[in-house]
Image 1 (cartoon, helix red, strand yellow):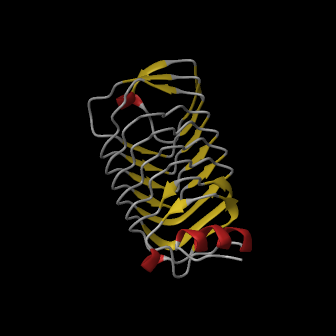
Image 2 (cartoon, rainbow, N blue to C red):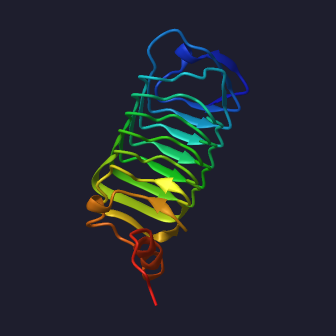
Length: 195
């Protein structure tokens, strides 16, 4: 394990654990595999076109960073700050978020396969035109005022999470999994009056 070091992003080694390290801006394409990051900081703000395979992130602040057109495969985010992160046109597969803050995150035009979201806030998050392959499992998350417009919601399970209002495309609601209390909120947005 490497502790309390300042390193170039290009110097990250596969199979290594980094704790309380500071990473300087890299100059090469970012392809990182089998790395654990704990309470590290990243000077770089643009991670576009990056690849992250079998990585774990704990206590990392990625707020307002750019990850456009990036790939996350078998990654885990735990207690991370993902506020306002741009994940436009991403590919996420077998990736988990737990106890994170992801308000205002933008997943527009992304593909998500076998992803799990737990105990994370997604207030005003954008899931616009997202392809959910094999659904999406959420537990104890908050999706207030998030947008799922343009996304087919078959297999997306929000039943163990919370929202007061969400945006969606009515034609793509089929297969969305919600609980009875959420149903009243969704029906009201369709113009149905409940007495």
